[in-house]
Image 1: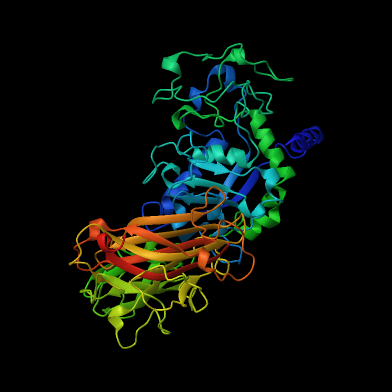
Image 2 (image 1 turned 45 degrees about the horizontal axis):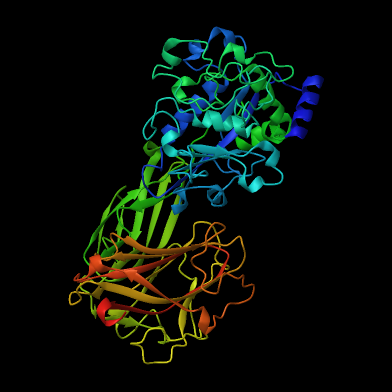
Length: 597
């Protein structure tokens, strides 16, 4: 930060293009699970309108800036434009869409799902919710990375915001949409107006020193403290910084975009803030605004707009079901307007119908199994196809297995039983080749109803499948628990070891009584930098292929009392994360608690 301040002053002294108009190419990455967080192109366009109005001081509420500050409020000479050419030279609307559960409680991990070169684009990730950084803090609406981290941490450069604070229409919670304005300020090196300290310094001469952030200063009309101004709750509490033009006696600049005021209370950047942001561009982000980069990203004034081919995508109301269940599919293509589409071509493996040309078809599946679904979307500019493997999972309508139920992994063909398909286990998730049956597990035979010598187990190595958002799912067949009264538990044996302190793994157990249409999470363990209740080897790091000793095996118990007496109950083991050596499951049983303490 000190180096940047020095460079900024040098650039200002040299008069380096601080009055030039800068254009910044932008890409939005929408991370979603098919819900309302998958915001529309129109909502993103609306957010871009607000962002550019705020940075150009063309926002309709400039008249609310108090006169003492109005002469220091101004146009930043910075403009943001959605990219029209992607990194591969393809036509784009400046929006990508990625299906991932990382949209929930998002942090920097969402950035590893997709990022365009930060030296060519400003990356904005739109998510459902953001992880709360401070346990005592409020809801996090967005966060950004400062420009001085670009070269050391370029893989996380950009801005993350919640979908309901993006823009002012549709899913947006207000009609102001200034979360991105605030975060773009950080991305261009602006600090909070109170300097993130008690009477801290934001290094801007035309913003008064602030003691702390302002909350709830304005009413819903954006008027200050019942119409009273100057607003001076901390008058005399802070000393002015050297060279400061505006002092605390002028009142709090709560209407500044870099305060914590409500959106309807904000309406200005200062001239000094504009200069600091332009200096951040010339110092750290200069490649973004070069003419060559504007041409390469399609954001130059002379770029000729053309229709883009669609990018196919879809979702459905369910991905699991019983034999005979129906599914509703919905085309969610992007990169082109709906009005431009000339055709849809669906293929439903195992479904009835097996194909369709409707935008949103209905399909029924009559045989158990896992099935692929494909969609091709076409317009005059081209076509695109997406195939989702093992997208639909169908189970028998009536469970053939009965409780008490026991399962080990000694059968060589597991999870498939050629002669008894009703006993098949199902591998699902977005990665299906990561589970493996191994025969050197050294199980201590924790389950007393098993009289055999267990040597086989089912394993997932997250070290080998470590892309963010990958899930690895193992599902039992339906089990009839009609003859079991509460209390009832499911037991399984577990051995797990982490590779390093950077491991971030999660194992969950979910239960369903309707072939997976609805799941209830009943058990979870995790291993990360904050907690480790998943490791069974004492928490030590393992840096070689993991073969657990007998002491590494632990028996786990899942309370399924609420599912006792149900006729078709399934368990789902979901493993996700990066960096673990092994998550190994062996011997699973459903049993009434009284008979197995």
